[in-house]
Amino acid sequence: MTGSLVFFGYPATLLIWGCATALCLVNEKVTEQPATVTGDASTLTTTPKIMAGSHIPFACGKSEICRNYCEICQTYFNGPTMECLSLIFEHLCLRAFEKDMESLNSTDWCIWGNVNRLYSNLSICTEEISDCLCIPWPNPLVEKTFVDIHTRFFKECPTEDLSDPPPAIIFALVITPICLIPVMVSLVVLKTKNGDGSS
Image (tube, rainbow, N blue to C red; front, side, top):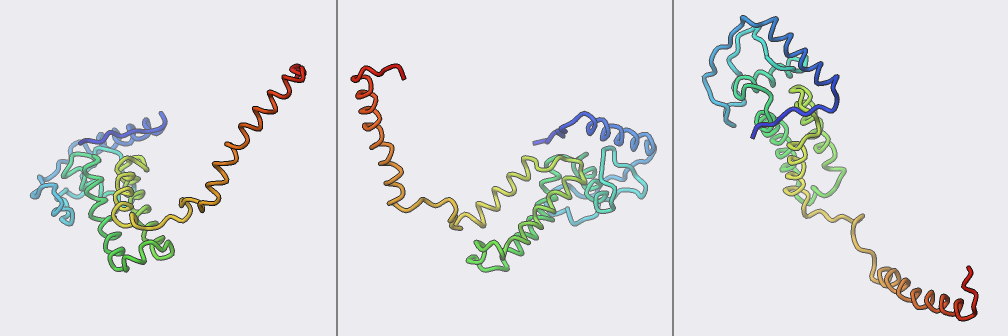
């Protein structure tokens, strides 16, 4: 599955294309050393073998950590693909979140005060990596990531806000319109019998 970059505006697309082109033109004679490992899950901790001063032929964030992410994607995936983003999410964001969640009791998972910091850190992590690779955030991978963690960690949590009201309230809400229908029909019939159909 290769992800495509989707941008919500012409200027952003032009800017990223221009940056990528400028990087290619400036560093067109620099070559990369071949990577000695493949891009599977076990190699993310290995630093890619890219020569100092080498170029990244696509738009990339300016910070050093962004350059590291971009070099990983360039070395193992030939660009900022969704597979690369998924791999980085899994190793940096999800593992930290899972480790922190597993340090809590499962009964504490449903208490927002216990998990809001962990949840926010996960969200920030996915956003920063997406920004570094110039992939829009949120994206389908981010959505899938959060659906997966909700399914795994928060499925059993009660949702008081969405629970059904008490039976007495449900009965009143159902029976009121049912009782009003015959009354309204009777009023219409009575009004037309009296010959006052003008209003």
